[in-house]
Image (cartoon, rainbow, N blue to C red):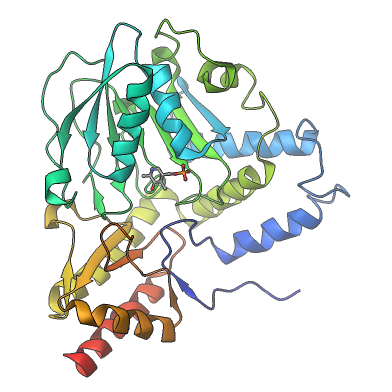
Length: 360
Ligand SMILES: *Cc1c(COP(=O)(O)O)cnc(C)c1O
């Protein structure tokens, strides 16, 4: 069998680039899981080999994020989109409410889902400025938790670190989980769709403080009850075995590469490379305000809109994929998840330099 290498520079926002070794091992497991004579996708999820996979995946999340024992780890389904509702249901008391920081499309959707279920309010929003920055989180309120989107995948903005607030945080970390260390005690719950920085689509990771769960007074539907899933060790029903296995492989890779601290350094180097060129090159403008720039998704536009399709052609010719900006803001977006090498970012900045030479 040929060895998997990346021949395309994959800047896609999600599903994302994965390490070649992970693709290699995941495809081998589809043929046969660890010498068991059965494929990963035909073996029982209750069998010893798959239970071991699930446990290793959960343990790797605990060790790589340094989670204290009172945090639970689950791999469920429904994506981050169902997480909007699930987190609201599990962390908003029937007689209480949740605050929302509206910093982009996903944050807005989270608030919309929460409102269908109970009391939820926007405490801050950057919508009037096209979600180009992360607004300050206001001080005190009577809500029991505040929901944030740590990295706004579409607009390319990101909280600079773990925010300091007077209440527990519920965070959608879909597009920056495992990109840097986190101060876990600030969070009541973190959720993240796997397909941005962890694995393939099909599973969503939940991390939550067991001491803060189950206090809402709600009678939750079974699948939306995090504590029920925890009682069943994340095996309440048939789990998405391929997505969990491949996420586990990515976490093994992450550990082997030096963990989230190493990823933080690599991601900072990639971000410095792209933003340096965006700021230097007169043909391009950064989209996000400088203090709010995302390390994961760099958004930028052409100074002259007529150049947009020409630059996309130039990227295409250089084997650069997924650089077109989200339809809601246009321009370009370079997503630089953990598995994207710095060399791919250098290919992109070389194309930008050459574009300046030929079109400036
Ligand atoms: C992609 C994304 C989502 C939606 O994830 P699904 O798993 O497709 O539901 C939610 N939040 C953020 C920040 C995202 O980037």
